[in-house]
Length: 128
Image (tube, rainbow, N blue to C red):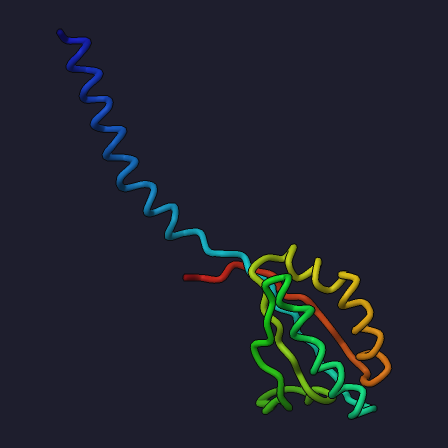
């Protein structure tokens, strides 16, 4: 009988630890997202307009989208050299697969002909 009581108490303690511990662990983890930031100084407006027209179709299949595209309102430091675009992807893999995809590589050539660019990836945990 003592063994049974000990097992029941152990089981109840385990359930209590799980009930408290699992939500605490979930609260500490955030989703890892990747943002691509591109600074683009447009040298061929017609070519760049065509790039922007065709770009959304390449992003969709990799769960990406444009968060913002504009001339930045710089508050500190040197100004960006042209338009800044911020792309969002759910995972680092989605971002890389998009950037190196066959469809985007064709479009990338158009962007490189129509703008001077600086592109970088930012990957990190997004607090939810």
